[in-house]
Length: 117
Image (cartoon, rainbow, N blue to C red; front, side, top):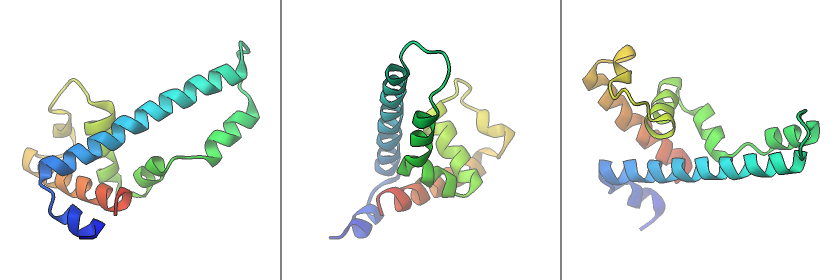
C-alpha cells in the first residue's frame, strides 16, 4: 500500500492527529531555532542580518505549506492547531458551525496531501 492509499483510509480523528503532530513538532523546532538565534546573537540587542537572512532562506516546509494552502484553510490550520484560542467559537466570526466543520475537514485533507502526500 502506498502513502496516498494509506492516507485515504484514515479516519478524520487519525487525520486530525497527524496534523496535530506536525504542528507540535513545528512549534518545537521553531522554539529551538529561536534559542539558537538568541545564543548566536549573544547579549546584543540588535539583530544579526546574517542570521535573519539564514532564517528567511530556510523557511520550513511547514511554512511553505501554510502559505500555499487556500487562505481559509491556512486560517483554520493556524487557529485550530497552532494558536488554539481559548474561545472555542472563534470560527463564528468567519463561518457558520456546519461550514466551519466542512472547511476543517477540507483543510486537514489538503494539509495532509501537501505534507505527507
